[in-house]
Image (cartoon, rainbow, N blue to C red; front, side, top):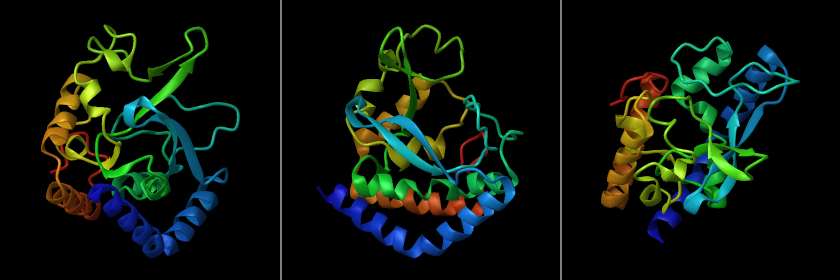
Length: 211
């Protein structure tokens, strides 16, 4: 109850204080690349429930297609404004709306992106094919998934701060579950403050750990 109250209050305050930034960021995105300012994607929430996550668009607008998910520090599809937004995590300001709605928390496991396969009618995790991911048909089969899915996904968290982007999902879930086992108000506060530090340093797109 304390965590949800804290999330709601801080998200509401954040929306009020960041309102001038919304206008500046929106104009910058539109002037450089036209197209929509916001980006919506289906993500997996608590207990596997899907929700629409909001972000500022950072990639070039594709009217007739969709970008593939690709994790690399220098991505040619990302706009100049988008690179700045990603480095400082300002592209995730709209996540405050998801936190207000209860889809997300400030601190928790990263919300996983999903797609629907028409022939299977199931949510399957979109991930690069690696030796680690090919052995599982569904992300819920990866060890550690069940525990991390019991809480709301977060804007920041232990894995987001301390885990390299390139580690496999089994290792990433270990970071997530360490947070689940140790979670407290003071840990949340510490992780939020560390996240502000990473934002000020512009290190969110670094492939290695941020702290």
